[in-house]
Structure formats: structure tokens, C-alpha cells
Length: 277
Image 1 (cartoon, one colour):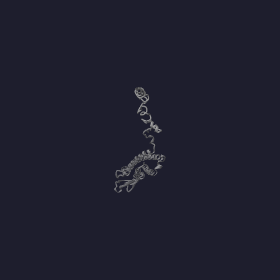
Image 2: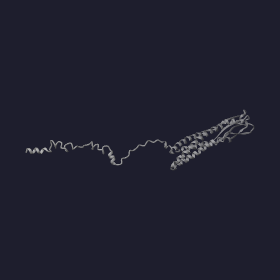
Image 3: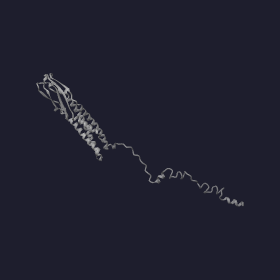
């Protein structure tokens, strides 16, 4: 998911670079003091086509002046950096609108996350390339606008009778900040790349889930469950072994063990009574 940070840091990146304007100041003191110029201001700005920037310096030959051009064209790296920042801002804005108002369309058939992942990967790579290119370009801009380096290329300063010196250096803190924002955007888009990758569902084959527990099949009828329950159905408490089952065939009721054959009331009782009478 995109956050508002990508929007703001993209703005900071192209704003600090694209709106930059700087200047430096130097002086040329001729042998003839009347021909000197002690305050020469040189201005330059984005897109840093320095070979088109020039200033008038005294030639120390009467009141003649000569045009001095700066050296270098660093517009390609600067414009590339600003272009990536602007397009990154526009894409982040469009992506947030889709996330908020068209979430269903975004997740339909999983095409939205896949397209988002590809575009985010491209912007991440572009941030890396543009930030590195602009960091190198900024280093060259600082070198080309260093007053001491500019003085070394001036013919009037080659004469020992003339004195050329630096008065003020250009302030490039804003350009340094643009490079920092460039690499910070790289980190943010790299983090977004991971979150968008998880939304694509491509990580599903690599996920490990716990094994499913097998459930025992339910009994088909209530009678089966009753017969399989311990203590019922197999007659182990009241059937063959357990419980109370008197044996009537062996204890005097079936075979007349004690009262029928020997000493009971079965056959001998009436005979003894008739004899005594």
C-alpha cells in the first residue's frame, strides 16, 4: 500500500532541484585600479547548462571587457532526476485514488496488484539510477561553479600584475537535500515493492501451512454408536460374565438335588406318615 510519504518526498525531490538558483562572486583587481571590477556576480540555475552561462570580466586593457563562460552541461542528469520525481508523484497520486475509491476494480482478477508491482519495480530502479546520476552531476556542478576553478580559467588572471580572488561561494545546500530525498525515495519505493509483491499472491506457493488433522468418520446410525460404546452391546457386564445370573439348573430347582432325591419334601414324606398311622 502506498502512503502519503511517497507523495511528499517526491515533491521535495523535484522541488529542491528544479527550483534551485545560485550565484557566486569574485573580483578582478588590475594593475590600473581604475580598470578593476571588485564585485562580479555570476548566477546559474536549473537545468545547469553552465556552458551557456557567462559574465563580463575586465581585460585590464583600458576599459575593455571579455566574456568568460562557465564549463560543462549537466542538464541531462538534473532533468532526468526531476522527470522521475514528477512521474513518481503523479503515479503515487493515481495509485492512492485507486486504492481508496476503486478497491474492487484493483483486486479484480488480481490484475491490479500485478500491474502495480511491475510499475513499482520500474520506479524503484529509476530512482536508483536517477539519484546516482544526479549525485555525480551535482559533484560536477560544484566543481564547475567553484570560484577558484573559474579564476584558473580566466586569461586576465594569468598575468601576475592582476589579482583575482573569490569573494563568495555558491550555496548548494538545497541541491544536497535533493540528492538525500532521491535516495530516501528509493528506500520508500523499495519498501512499497515488498508490500505490493505480497498482494499479488505470488508468495502463496512458498507459504508453509500446518498439516490438517484427520477427523474420524461419524457413525452411520445410532445403533452402531450404541453397540460400539464400552459397556453396552457386547454383554460384558450383564451377558456372559458380569452381573447377576443365577444357575437354576444346578442349585436345587431343576434336578431336585436336595429336596427331591435325599432329604426334602418330594417322595419320602407321605410314605413315612402312612406307616405310623
